[in-house]
Structures are given as structure tokens and as C-alpha cells.
Length: 275
Image (cartoon, rainbow, N blue to C red):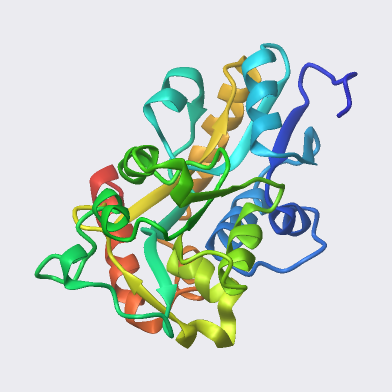
């Protein structure tokens, strides 16, 4: 990392190698995050922005330590801890919430772990029944407050925790190779990594989990960070009701989910009073 950074430089740390390649204009988007971030950064002045690949652990250390240089990261879910320590943009990415995936050729889940709607009662209940099974999760990644709380209550023997700069690919590869039994993932990420292998998996909702989740730009608390977030919010407000912004979502979702995400974005626009 460059330590001789001008006070007006903004460092964007990215923990996904593909996100970095897209913003460096070396690759095309393959998911919602990449497509929506591309829309945003194409409309930003990039003259003082530096894109850097870094694990989330390193990003977090830098953001907590640095109070002079503006440091931001992308695709972050709000948690109580993060909101206490960092600044957030308006939502950049609207995701259909994560689902629990299993291999289709493994035995069906016992009715004991499902409610009457066919959703998994809870992760704790699942692993009380399947005590010898494994779920893969990414190190230092928030799955949102609801799932974070459930994951924290699981025994460590049931969790295969994986780090790395491209956590989505890492966890999906472990699941694809059947080194673990379960995966928590966005449908859009399963489409991205599974591609023609999607029929190998079965998915389940987690009972009472949020139906959608929002991803934001998250920055440390500096004046330059605040100015950047103000500009980002202006750009987002002018893009929420555009066809391009909607397409950046539906292009990477199964057809049956298009109406749902369209309604989620439309409701958010009404909430902001932009309709």
C-alpha cells in the first residue's frame, strides 16, 4: 500500500478480485455488485481515486487506524458495529437475501428441520439435527445481522471458515467440490459460479430471514470521505429509477426473481419520495 498518499486521495479497498478488475476496466461485470458499481464509478470523478485489492481484515484495520486518508470499501451490509464506526452511502446494490444450498444428490432435508412453508426453521435447529454436517462461510464477511447472529451460535465443528481476497469464489469452490454440505449464498452468486451446474443444488429459505438485503459503500470518518459519499448519493438518487440500474440487477437473476427485485427498488424509490 502506498503510504505517501495525498490528503485528497481516496483509497477504495476491494476484497473481490473481479470487482477490482471491473473498476480498473479490465473485465466486464458478472454479477449485481459489479454492474451497479460500474454504473456508479463511471459517473464519479476518478482523478483522486485509487483502487486497491485487499482482504477485508486488512481493509478494516486500515479504516480503523487511518483518520487522515479517506478509505472506502464496497458492497457492505450495515451492522450495528459498522454503523458505529463508519460512514455509509445510500444502497448501491439490492440483493435477494441469501439462501441455504445443499447438493441435490444428497438426501432431502428432514421435515424435522423445516416449517410448514418448507423453510429451514433456523441454522441452530438444522445443526442440532445434522450434527456432523459442515457449512462453509467466509471469514470476516457479514451475512447481515439476522444470519450473523445465527452463525455465531453454531458450534465451530460445523463451520468451515475460509478467508482470502475472493471469498465468494473460495466458498463456492469448496461447496462445488463437496468438501462441505451446505452453503449460504445469494441466488445471484450461485448463478455466477454454478452456471450450468445450478440443477445440482437445492435451496431453502431461512425462516423469518429478511427477503432482501442492501449493499453500500462504507468509508472511514474523514472530511474527504463525507464529501465522496455526498457525491455518491447524488449519483444514486439520479439512477435508481433508470432502466440501466434495474437491468444491472435483473440481468444476473433468475427470471422468476425479476418482478420481486423490481418491486423492492420501486418501494425504495417511494420511501425516498422520488416517485
